[in-house]
Image 1 (cartoon, one colour):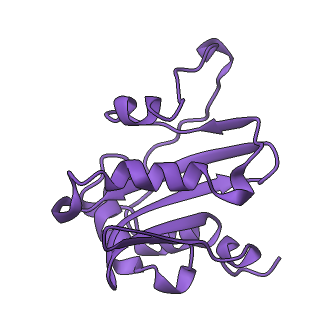
Image 2 (cartoon, rainbow, N blue to C red):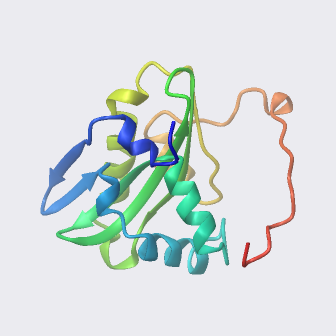
Image 3 (cartoon, helix red, strand yellow):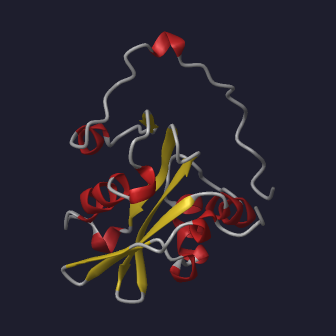
Length: 158
């Protein structure tokens, strides 16, 4: 596989609703918007370097949410597309919140043809349990089996 985006492996999927679009077309993604939100507004990756965000997007199946040509939200999935997927970096920009767009984004991701039949779909959230429970996500039944390596937040410029 060449170091192009994972999105090029699959046909582009596009969806429309009430003047908004969701697309997996990597050409539509605005790295500046995604980086700005993750680095300056998210609790999970404050200060993340632009280069890291670009690399994360490159190796993930990305979903852009758009109001016309303007990026209004984003999410990405890390997966082997066979047994496991991890949902990450889900956000809707403030001016577009309160319209059900986050729900639509998650629903669209979970119905993506390449993400069907997976044995496990996971995510981490500090404050959106109610949203994700609507789609069947639940607390891990055996958290004692779940292990991680937790490293300090990487340097801001790396």
